[in-house]
Length: 162
Image 1 (tube, rainbow, N blue to C red):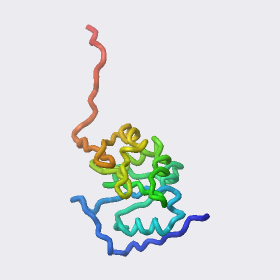
Image 2 (tube, rainbow, N blue to C red):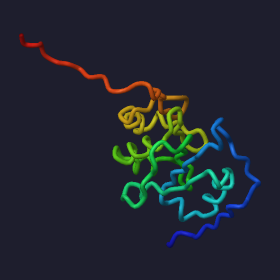
Image 3 (tube, rainbow, N blue to C red):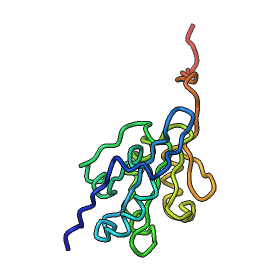
Image 4 (cartoon, one colour):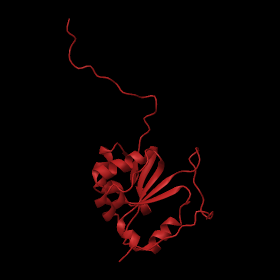
């Protein structure tokens, strides 16, 4: 079955845009491929977000290298559930390399969570989140803000010869 075509009206102002103090918050929606076959579910999710500051990408396209995510662009990344309401398909597709790419797309203090408040910390993603530098926050993860002033600390191993 071919995926349905979804049209999005970029001029729809019926959705409120959240702000983070520096303008509108950027949101990335990560969808499992099976969600494309259920256009009504995808349309319902997209109607909840301001389309001018929300991007939608399929996880399988990111893993295949067809889509590259910009670094430190998103304030929030939301992993969408499939048509059955489960994030199992998305979790299976978020391999270490894909998860690293997704974590780099988060701004400092940005959050990664699942649709409908599903607990990502209870999935196999918890280990990958920690390895990608994220910390647990509620039912999701957050990218810590280490500040711009911190830099590389050189370590001198060994002793000086006289």
